[in-house]
Length: 114
Length: 111
Image 1 (cartoon, rainbow over the protein chains, first blue to last red):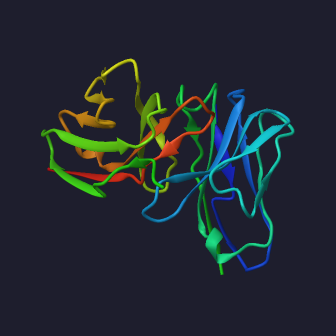
Image 2 (image 1 turned 30 degrees about the horizontal axis):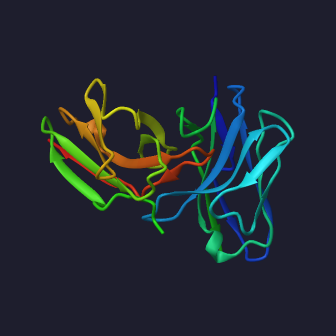
């Protein structure tokens, strides 16, 4: 049972480039989330999904896009990367609403935009 | 506006003693609170939670206390062990799908 798997673990992007952060879970969870963590800060919610085909914005969605075509996968797309997007990105999933049940996190993707 | 606040960025405790990590929140609509632990280069892992209908929840060495009138919760670790050294995040949610995290407290347990 792999849990939540994120790829890649590390990436350096140049300003203006695009990339997709991959996230997949094998727990058949309906809820999936993308967070970013900046140094000395808590986790900020970027986007979330309550099921396949349904996505919604979190606290800091600007500059990102998501899709949820399957229950397992929840990729995060960065278009036109900017230095402000340098951060550690975490994907998470949960069986039901995250505030009411524990969420399982991936190991994170450390992204640097130069 | 930081709705969930962890005002102590770090805490250092001797092994065997009690660790107390504090968290304050501003939104009175929050009704569920969770603590997550994070080791370097890993994702956060769930530790313990409490709903607003309780004022205490215990799981082994970990106890969370909730004071709704003060909008304050605390995590007690007794006894503290070196393996408890990590960053601890407090998180809160109301009747939404969103979880709001605090900025974290780095706990160091020394021998």
